[in-house]
Length: 258
Image (cartoon, rainbow, N blue to C red):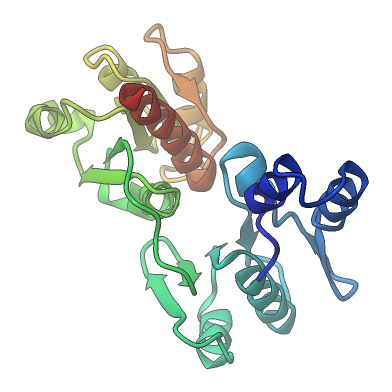
């Protein structure tokens, strides 16, 4: 297991190692090279609170397994997104560290592998999707928020074409710290939610829809043009939306404990 940055700093603070030795070890931990194909930012979670995720899309399946296992051994867990059926099969056949758990989310096309116990849950994230077709991207956001240690409440198929479906869901989410709202087509739902709730709303445009403005463009433009106050991520950026919401929720929960 990679040396923990917190433990290293505690050793320096306690006078067990010199400043030069601490700097040398930190530089050594700045990234982990995997052959000639990857340089893993294994200290990212400790540095900014958001873990590095491995995008499987476009990667050779053998390289993906090597990168994933290296990340797992260094940090204790790994999030892999946009995983194909062929890549999934090879990951399942890989020799994982003893006690590791592989969790595949079919809708999100994500894989999480853990060799350490999940961290205690802190903060709440609410995830809404306008239509059933928007669920895969919303599920990617959910996986990331949960892996970052947040509790997640999700409700799907609550778009503005039947707006009455939304209100019971918002009642369930009355106390969440941040929302992720996924929508394709014209992308109206995030603006509506942002006009109804106090918690921050992250608009997640989805590449569902067709015709003029298809592929998520109309949804993105609509969210950017919203007169309701919300943050907007890129089209299909479920990881970014989930991570941003989790960061908000965790900081709010931490502040409440002070």
